[in-house]
Length: 256
Length: 256
Image 1: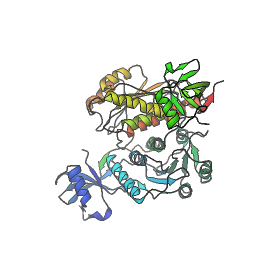
Image 2: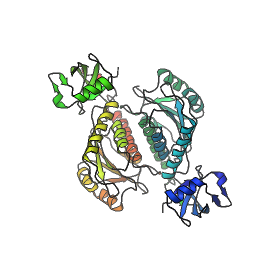
Image 3: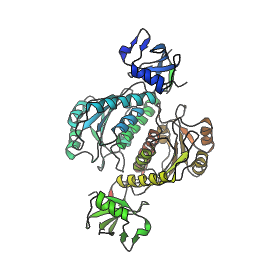
Image 4: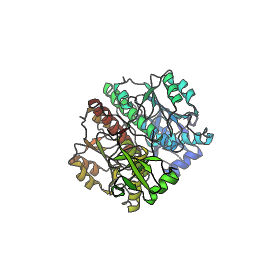
């Protein structure tokens, strides 16, 4: 049975009771059309989840569940903010299993987005995580300049890739195919906006430990590139790490 | 130098002169802001392309060019028409290299789309092919029932995959990884709409020579699934066939 899902804040849970806020009550009753006595899944968005039974203003925990829908690795996506389509990038890449999205200001991006937009993006990530049945809601980081992002994420991560078009560089598929895969590896990948990266930015990336990679012979839009990159990384991660750990299976299980 | 691109009909070309229609003249002059004397790329959308020089109402062929941006295989996408997002599917999958898109009416899709929509979808495919620098504009087939599509595309194609969630089936990545790859192979892949396929549809697919595959442990939306599937197939095709044919390189070259 597939239950409806909602994300809670840690302070809402005390003594096996979740105090619902107004927005959640509205969502559960009016949008999802659930009634007192119905069951749902409450998530922390940080890995924990429970089957709950609804009362008019609360949700009582019935039992914890394990969600085996997360990737065995973490993916951090640095995405140069395109004019249009950030919502689609966040929604699709959340479904595909990304852990962290860092909106990046590059030479060819528009000015810094407003705080409202950030709140909206985090909300989209939450909804997409619920709908795709993830255990983790990805973090959307406050936008930063490319160079800062390269410094912050280029060191301390073993695999850092920088997608670029029109350069004779190896394809991401080739690189992933040759990569060693271990559980809990972390992969950082950057994609550009309309017009791509400048030569200076490409140099900065290489200096910061990022390997240049291609996403194929065609020119992808700024919205398509991160979805394609995340699809490939998620596909390889699940295949390669599954083969060393056959216990990795999808779905929803009761904890034993 | 990257020239602007436009697709022509075969009857527009005679004696090295392309007669521009009103829409093309408007597009080249007003939208792309090109002037007489400027150069552009004219495409048939079926593989041929030329550098042309613009005059007020015509385009004179300067020389043919070879576009090496097509995949070494063909991908036919059967896509159960979702409520929203068909435009995004066509745009992204065209960029990724799909050859044919067959909109499919399944048990859980809406009624048959209007002729207007079909014209609109073909126009989106054309624009996306121009922008992604493809040589081929994908065909958008008149929508048909799933069973008809399974019959038409299940026989005569070596590799037929049917994406489904919540079933314990091999992942598409695993299958592609184990697949033999040859130039000009044709792959058919089907993705579902909201609510997925019915049990009857899954059985029909298997009877029609389609192998059930998964796109990972998370539940993807109807828009994300075909983009992910196409990303994976395109990535593997280019990697595997490149390794037996190192002459396969991207970019735009003059014919010798």
